[in-house]
Image (cartoon, rainbow, N blue to C red):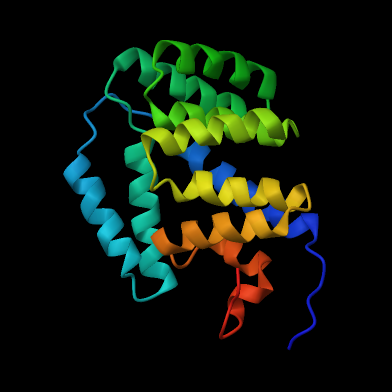
Length: 190
């Protein structure tokens, strides 16, 4: 059995920072979401042979998630990503409050707001928003891995393992897996 070290906050922040840079670089565009394309990408992602292939598929999924059909929603999401990139979290939160009110079935609106709540260390609101994300997009590996990070921060390792395992079933090469040494063992008991 390997010795397991406590999870440092720095790798978590580094992973979140990389995700923020990537997500902020993707403009939300007004075009329809092709669910058949998304279904195909998820099927390929589950079977990805290696991390680079999985990362490419992940990026394509994020583009679809961040591409709302409605022009007003697309404009607001662009504003959110700009505000987040600048770490102007109160502005991003204000816009996202309007997004989830006006577009309550848009899963990525809830996910982006959950991310802002996470960055503000408002874990109860982040968890509530993640529940909404998963109601509309149960395959949202970002929401599942985000919930795992929250559970880690709250010292709820069993719940974190449950969520990261669910995320890894969708995306076997998630970077957050590195925060769970027990998942690198041959046999994991959750």
